[in-house]
Image (cartoon, rainbow, N blue to C red; front, side, top):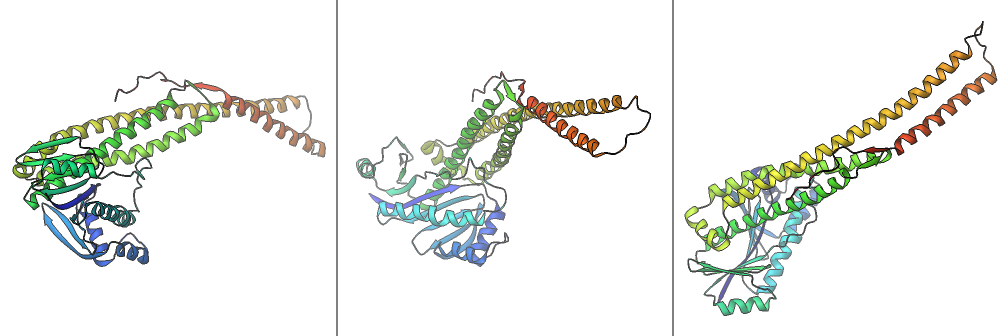
Length: 390
């Protein structure tokens, strides 16, 4: 068995504008985002770049060669593929992983650290990137022995067109896909599919978390006036998260269509479908489902915010009403006191003291009544809801 190359990769929504920013960073050490020049230099130096060139093949991409034996391509749609010729498998795994996570990811994170924030639910997610290894003349017993040596358990073996694909949670081996350029295209498409589905699965998980949090607030049945502001603020935070993720989900459809257009159906699809069970139509259906689910989550949150807005207005209205009542009583009492007088009152120190005392008593009385209203429990309309089946 002859081991050829090791690949890993990832994908996150990007455009040709971002590709230009990466190019300016790599080639000219420039950024329009106003970063400190020293920070930019440190970020580029850690990449060990020997050469960078801009190319076009269906999609525009930057090809980077490094002094540590790793080559990678950054495509305009955000797909990144790293490859390394075989030397020693376990050390190769560590070197390519380290470069991706500790060098390339950190440098690109700096470059795109300004602008719309990444939702905290998506931040600090450690992506497990299976290594993809291409081999030639691999025998079944040899490949299984290699998996055992690496402590990986094979869960799938598929053969088609004289090509074999072995899969475990941390390693994919492609045996006898002899055309190196075709192998790269198949690997790129496979990584795009996997990363796309992984993002959709994250959004599904976040939907469930947010739905439960919103439901826990909305299903309280009744709530104290003092808690209305805090809970509405919590819902507003969820709304920001939903809006940020909603924008990302709505972008994703364009990436499917672009990848589908540039894929050589006769060549790449002939291997993707039987070997990896990936179809663009299935990916689009999954995306549409997540979009619908996210729209439903947004509507559910909006209804909860509207309820708490009404409760907030009701609590404020009660406080204002109590103040109006106290003021009215004070005015009426003052008028009644002087109805029988034949002259206007004169200014005295006792009168001033009486006036100040009246203001203090009014303030205390208003505070007491206001607290009573705030402690009052308000019924949440629509508390009994049917949960989403998901």
